[in-house]
Image (tube, rainbow over all chains, first blue to last red):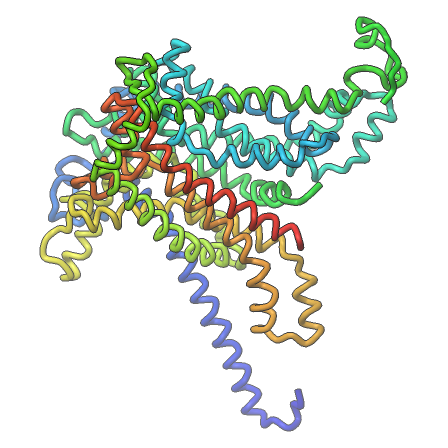
Length: 297
Length: 313
C-alpha cells in the first residue's frame, strides 16, 4: 500500500471504516449468538419461569406471563418431589441407564477394538453394518419387540428396557469407540506385547487406560440416548412404579384432564439442565469421535 | 500363526515370556471372541425382531390373540383402504422433507456461529445443546405449555403487539398443528446437525485453504472450489440424520397432538403405535411401521455414498 500517496485524512477515513466494519461484524455475530441461545433455550426459560408461579398468577390470561405478578412459590416444585412419582421415575431412569451403559461398554469395547485393530476379512464391512443398525429405529421394531418381551415374561417390568436399550446404544457406541481406539498409537500395544503382555493383556492394560476419556464420552452419550427413549418404554410398561422419566412425566403427572403445569415444567427443567451440563462438558470429545470413526484405519 | 499345540490347561497360566501360543495372543480367534457378543446381541434383538415384523405383517396376531396365523396380504389390503394410513404416509414425507431442509440451513448457520470467536461460548453452547440433549418427550411437554391454547406467551405477545385479536390454538388447527410439529423437530435436531457440520468444518485441513490463497485464489474462488465441495458431504450427512430422526419419531406427535386434530399430524410411527399398542392389532401396526423401511434404506444408501466420497480426501 503506497501510503505516501494518500492524504492523512484519507488514512483516518480508511481506519474508521475498517473499525466500523469490525464493530458491525461483532454486533451481528453477537446478535446471532443471542438469537440462537434464546431459540434453543426458549421453551426451557419459559418452563423455568412457570415452575415458580402461583396458581392465581399462572391461570390469569391477562397477566404478563413473563414476570411474577404474584409472589413466586416453590410449592409446586416440592409437590413434584414429594407427592408425585417423579422420584421413582428418576430412580428408574438412572439405574436403567447405568446398567445399560455397563452392558454397552462390556460388549462394545472389545467389539470396537476388534474392528479398529485386529485382522479379519469382515471387519470393515461389519463396522458399516453395525453403524447401519443404529439407523434402524425403535419405531420399526417395537411391535415385534412387545411380543418378544411378553414371551420372556418381562412385560410391565423395567428390566425389559435393560434388555432392549443396547439395541441402539451398542451400535453408536461401537462406532464412537472405534474412532477413539484408532487414535491411540499402535506402538503402545506393540511395546506392551514386547514387554510380555499377551494381546488381550496389552488391550486391557495399555489400550483401555488410554481410551478412558473417549470411554467417558461414550458413557455420557449412551446414557443420554437411554434417558430419551420413549416408544419402547411406552409400549412395554404401564404400571406407574415401573415407568421411567421420559414416559412417566408426560403420562402420569397429568391427573385426569388437570395439567399440573408448574410441576410438569419443573420436571422438564430438572431433567434437561443437568444432562445438558454434562453433555456440554464432553462436546469436543464427541465431535472428534464422530470424525475419527469415519477415518479409515 | 504357530501351530504348536500346548495343553489348554497350561496355556492360560504360562509365563509371560512364553512364545505366542496362548489363546489370548491368537489374533484371529481374539477378534472373533471380541465381536461375538455384539453380533449375537444385534442378530437376536435387531435382526430377529425385524424379520418378526415382516412375518407379523402377514398374520392376524393381536395382543390378546398372539397365536400366528398366516393371512397373506390382507393387512396390507386393509391398510391401503384406510384414508388415515395415506394421510400418515403423506405427513411423514412432508414433515421429513421440510424438516430436513430447515435442519440443514439452520444447522449450517448454528455451526458457523459456534465455530466463531465470542465471549460466553460455554454458556451459549449449553443453551443451544438443550433441545438435543433433553429427552424428547420432556421438551415436548415444555412446548405443549408454550403453545397452550389459553396461556401461550407467544399469543400474549402477538395480542399485545396487536397482530392478533384472539388466540391462535396452535395445536387445535390442522395447518398450525403441522407447523408446530415441524418446528419442534427442527428445533430439537438443529443442534445435532450443527455438531456434525462442526466436526466436518474442523476436519477440513487449513493448509489447503492457505495453499490456495498463496496460489492466488480469491475468497469466492476458495469458497466455491474448496469450502463448499469439502463441506457438502458432511452437510448431506447432517441432513440425512435429521431426515431419519424426523421420519421415525413418534414422540413429538404423540405428546403434542396425539396425531390430531383429526389426524392432521398423524405420522406412520404414531399411527402404528395407536393401531398396534392402543388398538392391540399387532399385525396391522407392524405392517404400517414397515413402510418406514424403504425411507430408511434410501437414507442409509445415501449416507454410505456420501461417506465413501468423503474418504477420497
